Length: 448
Image 1: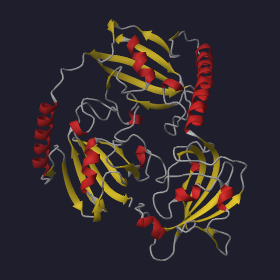
Image 2: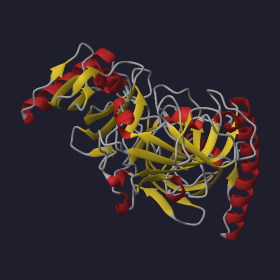
Image 3: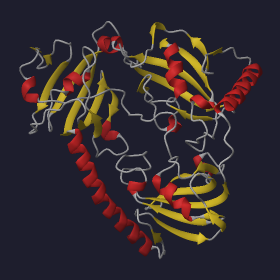
């Protein structure tokens, strides 16, 4: 119900930007095939003029349809994603290197359609991740076909989102009421717009914020399609879900709804999208603005365990890691923070530095060998390389520290004690509190 170690993961590892196309026609050198080459080497051609007048600036928001080609092969097509009718949301940023796509997209206005060509040699030099079919030194180019749907300032975007959220709240409420009426369900509505019904009353006091609940659950959409469950083997995690309630570890509808139940209760939560995942597509199974229906059973309610001091937890983690290394004949280096790492393939060039955008392949496991996330295994639903800015808190501390010891092409493993991961929190059912995390990683790109 929440992301794992990463706060965001976009499907295409590129940054985009926009500006006024009327200014673009006078820039660069005209090529024989109708493209214009900018001094940076980026080539572009506007194939349809839009009616927009808005010049975007850094921090603005845009939406685009994007189709990326390498030779004649499609690398990415936003129209063939799980919600093909929606453009890709983009936050405008300034170009960071010669040939940066950002420079090209800053030549467009709302409604423009354009094609951009970027030399593979420039992309690789700029730290872009390599992929099958890329050839250096032969003049190969990546082609981007782009249609701009909208451009808004930060303030305009905020106001639009607030207006849409207010409108969606009414839509969700009617949808829930219609569902309840159709199915003959009597439910209680809270001030936030959450509904819940109790099928079996438990005993004892209701849960309070800070307590840890052990829960069985099945999540569905209003059309009855299940998207997650810990009681259905199809979803591959049948252990009870333990969560500290009221602490933001789960969606708002859970944090609020569970406080109405006691041990043994069987109930259903009807959660409007504003208390779930809002206007963002969560997955192919959970489209934007989805009302979620959760059937839950409260197996146990426990007070928060006695807090272990960070020093004691660090020692316990270190002891477990040493035992793990000895058992598996692993040689790893230890840093002052308690992080361990091993390098299985040396890279080349300077190490990644704070502030640089780094692109990674990774698989994350707990110490029992169970994988909880990966961009290499299709079952986790995101097989694109993972980009993030190093050293600014976009990832867990163990990543921010460990990746700085690696350069382009490095393959290795990070052994991250809980204090450098999620500590006493449980971000997903697959990562219990105070978990040591093991990441097999490969650095596939570092921005210059």
